[in-house]
Structures are given as structure tokens and as C-alpha cells.
Length: 168
Ligand code: NI
Image: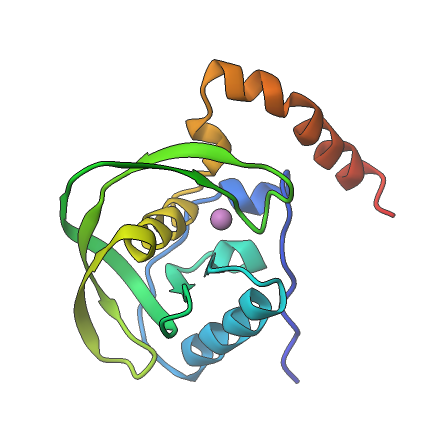
């Protein structure tokens, strides 16, 4: 029986781990992508990375309302431009940080059918992919916070840390 996936919330230590490349694209990877999509849509997110469900594999998904993109071993092979925008994260409820990202990217990876693909993405979808690849390296949006933002977020982060120690 398959174990249902569960969303991991900050400060869960799994969010700080580095994920490993997918070696063989098989049924388990496809199942993981499907399970991640269920969680992303259930929480009304626009992106999700495998470590956010406790799986340390390089698998990400995203959907900004233009169709689901699922990628194993995503790699940015070219990038241009700069863009600043407030970002949230399903693993950091009620937190927003202004993050500078590349405006357009070329990303390569293995899609849900096991085929290697390359996609040119810009704007919000490019941002989602960069955010999710950060998760694969244990990087969170709070790492981009300015000193002022860190100060403003201190109570919200402390609350998440307390909730983790004393789950409701
Ligand atoms: Ni996130």
C-alpha cells in the first residue's frame, strides 16, 4: 500500500536537506509526481518540490493555471533578465519575501512520461521553477529576506517554530 504524502512545514529539517538526482525514471517517480500534484492543488499552491513532502529526490512540479509541468532532475541551462516579486511557499504559511529571480530561463529535465525535455519559461512560471529548484538544494525564501524583512517576519517564524514543538 502506498503511504500518503504529507506537506512538510518549516522548521522541519527535511526542508534543509539536499535532494538526490533521480537515477531511474520508473513508476515510483511517476507516483511521486502525481502525489505531489494532489497536494499542490489541495493547498492551492502553484509549485511544489519533493522535499516538501519529505522525499529527498530531485523532482519538482508547477502549475500557474496554464497546465502542470512535472520535472525530474531539473536543470537551468540558460537564464536572462532580473525580476523582483513577493513570494510565498506552502512550507512557510503566512510568510512572504521579496525575491530577485531571473526573468527567463531554459530548463531541462525529465517529464512525467520519462522523456527528456527542454522548456523556455519566463515570468511567473520561470520564478516557480527557480523557487522549486531552490528547495532541492535546501534553500527557502526566508534565506533571501533582507534585514528589515527578517525583523518583520520574526514573530511569524517564531510562531511556526513553536507550533512544531507543540503540535495542535
Ligand atoms: Ni516553496
